[in-house]
Length: 566
Ligand SMILES: [Zn+2]
Ligand SMILES: [Zn+2]
Image (cartoon, rainbow, N blue to C red; front, top):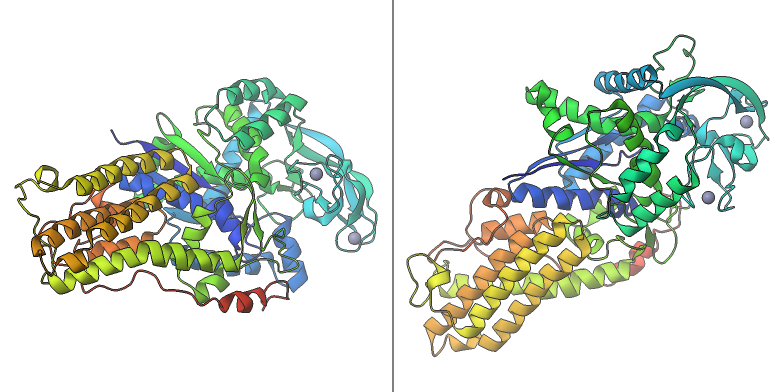
């Protein structure tokens, strides 16, 4: 029976280009997961979009002297281009600027209001007397009252991940002019999170399959006790509040951005021509997975589930596999100091698969991971090129030249293929091992253990190299052509298995290998299984899957770090 898998991916703020921290944290993992499930024949819906509201956008617009909408459309286009070139296979990548999203957000807002989970209250808000404006979220900075790191914002501390209220900040100041804010009364709408504390605790306690870091963080937070949170802001950029008297306020970006997961599913359904289709991913048996960076955990394990509980009738998250952070050359990534590797920049100089490989085999799943150019080039050259690429290339080249450009005929082959043929012991051992590992890799992928899954898949390449060293078909062919054909046939089968196992991680080179092996169409349509190349199947003229990278690039790339971006 096929499963229904809803893949919800963090909405990037359309205020700047994506960097490798974003990709390792929240964008590559869901793509690996989606490709695996689609290959398995499961129904997958993977959605996200540009988050175009909130103070990150207005601050950027003010800095550049542009309208927020101009900033948004520039980066939205860039995101779409990056997804396509890196192979991040969204079923829909929309934005929070659609009429549909406003409509769905208003429905959730008004339903929660109606049920008493949203109420109005007057609160004291920071106001800059110099700039003559309220200072929501990122317009105010100060020291975090929990972890005491400087640079905490009015809505959240990036250092410890805690959501904040501006009044809690120590030594707060206006980000635009540095003035110490006054506090003025302003009426806002609040989400009654306190009403959900017990239900959330009971629910989270059942999520024993969650990653330990996500579970611990969420439990700690709930055990401390939730506070009601303001969900409107004194700002003019965002979704209007559907209440009289709130004309100069907007819905808080975090409240409506998480609703994007639902509104995107509805938009996808409408454009598919079956308007009710979103229900199959939001009601009933579907499992929903939320891929985010660790700084967004509380919004996805507490705030959004509380909103869903209050609304009632929609599926709660099944898993929230949040990743830790990626450091760059051993240092904390910083966009303001340009200590970052920008995705559009990377893609202008390199192929997508080596990056996908590096960020997968070194994924920050259970702890922070580091990206360094030296290590990137080493892994490309030693692992992708030497271990996997050369294995494929030498087998395909040798077979192509010596067996009329086709898959050799196996000795004593039965009519139903390799499983009944008389394979020698070591060949059989390799095929069996590959079969076992293939299933194990699938198991790991279904549990979002991506790093371990890729490591395991790569052992198949190692084993096959060992097998070929032992069999030496390149020498044996001179005395015993059939013995060489037999071992090459085994190798071709294992390579064919590798292309499928590696497909979720390396979609471009797997598709290429699929074609080189003489298969037609899209690799994904062949399913998550061993594709046995048939004797006589015509191969395409071999081409290398990957290219070696010059070590001199390390210095060149290092020189780009830490300087003002171009
Ligand atoms: Zn903090
Ligand atoms: Zn100011």
